[in-house]
Structures are given as C-alpha cells and as structure tokens.
Picture (cartoon, rainbow, N blue to C red):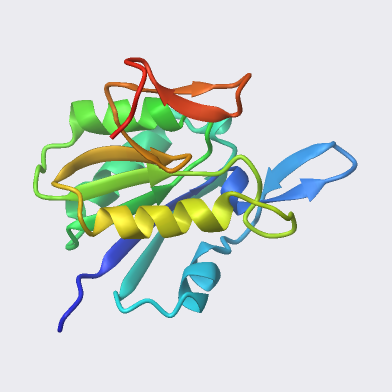
Length: 173
C-alpha cells in the first residue's frame, strides 16, 4: 500500500524552541528539530520538510506569510502540516484561507504551548501526532489542530488565560 507523503512546513514557534534562562523565555532553535522528531516516529508515510523561518510567531512578517503561501501553492503534496507559533497561528490560517488558490490539499496548522524537547510534559509530541492522524482523514481545506480539537480558520482563536485554543462558536469538530 502506498501512503501519501506529508509535507511539513516549519516556521519556528514554541514547539521548535528552547528555554533561554537569561531572558526567561523560549527562543526558536537555530535549526528545526521537527524533522528529527518526526523521523523518530517511524511513520509509514514519507515526509518532506521545508523550513520557511525559525521565528517567534509574533515576529512573522508579510514576507514570511507570502513564503508559506508560495510553498503551499507549489507543493506537489496534498497533505501538509505547518508548525507555527501559537500567538499568530490563527492569523496565518486566515491569511492562507484568504489567499490560497489551490483547493486540493488538506492543510493543518499546529503548534505547542511548551517546547517539543527539554520539558516534561510537553504538548508538542501530542499535537504533532494528532496533526499527522487528522491530515490523513480530513477533507481538503485549511484547519487548525490544537488541544485535541480541529478548528476551521473562520472560528479559531487563542484563549491566553486558558492556555488553549477555542472556537468563537463554542466548539470544534
């Protein structure tokens, strides 16, 4: 049985960061650990990895968004997972929905509140696994997968005081 390739598009964010004690915050890694982590899962699907940037999502600018859009548009793959910082993840999902011409892909944007490595527990391994599972059975479209839920770009919002994502309508899929 041939499994479809999953194209991972990497933008940095907390999921791909380390704790910097001197600054008392997380800083994006210089080199992504997502390919190593996903490779360790021994998936049946092939994977492709494209690094757009390694930034805190609050530092993502329009040029970065255009690069993400361009890579998605030109990807030869129909299953795409974008790892992203949580601060502007919702904005990026809406940008893609408004500007993406292709409608033949399943695109999931995900991130974590705690770095993938170096912290226990971290939601990073779960969100990546959840996104991998969901990208294989959702219909074509753009989704945000966070906190064990699937959200559409139109409804998703980050609730900072709860440390999770929610729907403006009150529930996800």
